[in-house]
View 1 (cartoon, rainbow, N blue to C red):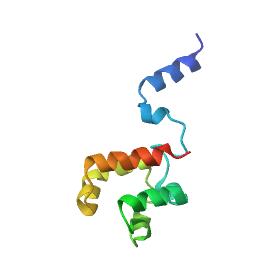
View 2 (view 1 turned 180 degrees about the horizontal axis):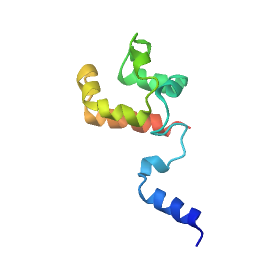
View 3 (view 1 turned 45 degrees about the vertical axis):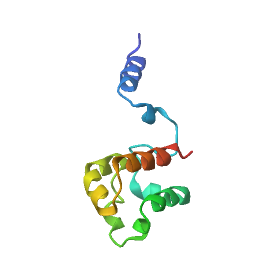
Length: 97
């Protein structure tokens, strides 16, 4: 068996169901690219009104969506979202086509 299919199969074994979806965004998408999409901004604003126009938003624009997960607890406390709401937000974002 050629090595490329083996690598592809191995890679896919470690991906989640969410990662397998072919949406516009994924966990490697930069925040700046997400903020360029009006539909994504509407979803973000639904959960955290005013955050996309906050003066400090520039600090996270170079991070990927996946990298922002390391700040999950800070986000929860600063904008009062539950784990369920954060999961719902991420699912909506990743579902955009």
